[in-house]
Length: 316
Length: 313
Figure 1 (cartoon, one colour):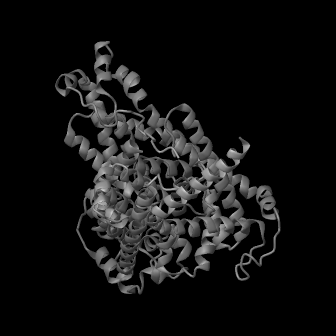
Figure 2 (cartoon, each protein chain N blue to C red):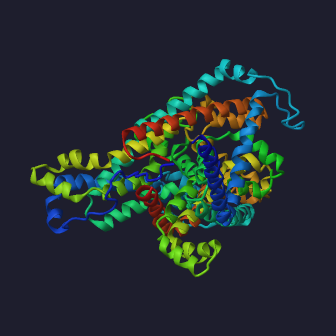
């Protein structure tokens, strides 16, 4: 018995290996298709992972990474004890939270309203107009925003016309962040509605018929049919935005901020750029960036496992 | 790797348009509700359109008009002075062509990598497929950060080269996944029958998959093109030589920092007549018009792309 087993098992193994090898050889042209993409990721995503060791060294750009001396957690200690760091994390999380609290519902409400419109031309015109700013860069849209909010801008002209005090949105630590949130909503709410419109069009209209037969009015239909119908989409979009909490919108903030609002508007990414690249403190910049990357990864990972638990959908 | 993700959550997809005639009447809102809904949407439309109208009006108006009427909705005393200035200095047109180069070259290379890559990765039966996808998904979820990437680009000698705006973003993992999902919708029978006729994998890709995936390729090509066109922070990081600045970076210095030095030799006599506000507005319009020209395609294909991601997952 044992003899047959012994002779039998390896044969299977060899066979499996042979067939695996055969499958690999048969698919060799498929690997060739993937190779350039794979090389790209290895070079531009995985070599920078090795570059993370900069955070554990006193990196000198001219001697190179290998020759720079190890310093252990020195830069992380410096980072965690620095008063800058607490401020950065607080600003990043706060700005993201405001964006979620005030910005997240807007595209949903907008999609619900658009969904009520039966006049197709009107609907299309509104969609065309509101989607547009999404395609502008933050440099261009920021330039447009400045026309309105700078000290001599339109908003202040209107305020003084009304006899109200002028507001400097760009240097006031009280007004800067609300300004960020509002302008970001204006730029993105139209386009953000598309995904919900897609979900809305997928709701079975028989559900509405049944609701009508049960005597449900428009609001009740929205509450009992429409919202449950798009709830999975809302949940996924919400969790995705939670996964993005550590990036509070570099482009927008970088274009609009200045030293007088660093106290409220300096986020992790802007700090890493200023300290890590402009001031060439590479090791500290890498440490702070790595902190962001790790937390961001954990957030998206936890978010995805929550999605998996809630239903059959997941992000990957 | 679970890929049957349904962002819409609805198992029906976009199906199920009911007997609209009867239902339409039942689902109609009372008049007052209709008025409120249409008005809110109108306000939303005005809020997004107004800023662009104002900037356009400013770009065509002389400075004393802008000073007198801050909220200018229509150009008065129309003048092309600002545009003349913008085109005369050559710097904006130069950076425009730089951006055109980066966008066209970048997008072509993006597609040249993404299409075969996604095609290869769509063959899930191939050994190692899960590992390869894992490598790409991990790269999507965990970024090493700004500094290590900068050091790498520096080491590769790409600083101050336009290739630094192209090569570090050759493939977007998100777009690979999107395109791979689309390729799954191409009927396998077509591929199989071509194979029986002796076609190689390469011929299958070029003769069957690509022609059948034109809408998806257009969508993803536009995703890439818009991100190249609007990209400014990569140039901010990697390009310090301002003669190589792409449009967005030059615009930033003009429109945001009010720095007109970079616009080249300033004709001191002229500058007195031209209010920087209308130059800024003209520069913004200059950068927006190309987007406006392709906007019908953008809207069509971006919406499709979102649906693609949403419905097919």
